[in-house]
Amino acid sequence: MTASTLSAISTAADQDQLGAAAGAGGRRSRKWVRHLPVHVVMAALGLVWVYPLLWALTSSFKTKMDMFGDGPSVLIRSMPQFQNYLDAWTQANFGRYFFNSVVITVLTVVFTVVFTAMAGYALARTHFPGRKVIMVVVAITMFLPRGYTLIPVFDLVYQLYLLNTIWAVVVVQVAGGMIFSTFLFMGYFMSANKELEEAARVDGAGFNRTFLYVMLPTARPMIATVGLFSFISSWNDFIIPLVFTLGRPDLRTIPVGVAALTGGSAGTDWPVLCAASVMALLPIVIVFVVAQRHIIDAFAGAVKG
Image 1 (spheres, rainbow, N blue to C red):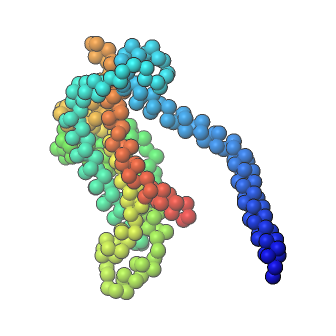
Image 2: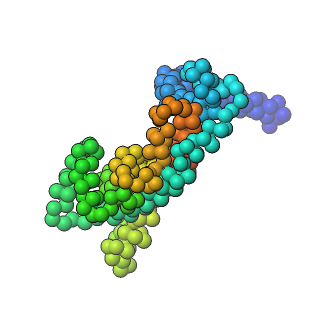
Image 3: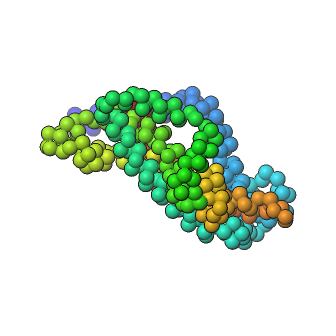
C-alpha cells in the first residue's frame, strides 16, 4: 500500500469522525431547542422559589431604612449589618430555643424512624386478621386536618401528665408523623427483594433478626428520606411546641421564638426578623444537602417500583 493510499484512507476516517461529531452536535442542538420551553418554565419556577429566600437573606444584612427604601430589591447597597444576627440571637433567646429544637427534633427523628420501620415491615410482610382494616384506618387518618385532633390529643397528653414537658412535644410529633412514614416503609418493603429474606430464613434467622440484620440495612435511602421529612416537620413545627408548652416558655422552640420577634411596643424589626428566619432555616439546608443523594435514590427506587 502506497503512502498516497494511506493518506487517503486517513483523510476519509477523519472526515467520518468529523461528520459523526457534527451529527451528534446537531442532534444535541435540535434536542435543546425542542426542550427550550421546558427549560424556560423550569427557570421561571426556580426563580419564583429562590427569590423569597434570597430576599430574606439579603434583607437580614440591611438597615430598616435600606430594607424599605430598596423595595423588593435583593441588592445590598450599604455596609452589611451583622449586628442584626446578634440582636436576633439575644432578643429571641435563640440559644435556649435552639437547644430545645435540637433535642426535640433528634428524639422525634429517632423514634419516628424506629417505630415506622418496624410497623411498615410488619404490615408488608405479615398477614394477620384485621391487617387490611388497620391499613384502611391508617390511610383515612392521613386526611384528617391537625386542627380536628388537637383538642383530644391535648386532653390525652394532659391525662398522661406529659403537658409542659419536652416529651409532650416529642410524643405528639412522632404520632403525627407515623402514618405517612409507615406507608413509605411499607411500600418499600413490599417491593424489596424477597430472596434476601428467604436466604436469611434458610440460615436460621427469625422474623426479628431478618428485619434487623438483613432488610433494615437495605432500606438506608428510605431511612434517610423518612428522617429528613421528620426533621423538617419537627424543626418547623409551630403549633405543637406552642400549645403543649404553654406553661413553660423556657421549653419553646425556634419557630416560636421567631414569632415572638413580631409586634411589640416598638414594632417589628424586620431586618432582625429576617436574620432570625435565616438562622432557623440554616440547619434544614445543611441536612438537605448532606442527605439529598439518599433522597434521590429513594424516589428513583419508588418510581422503578
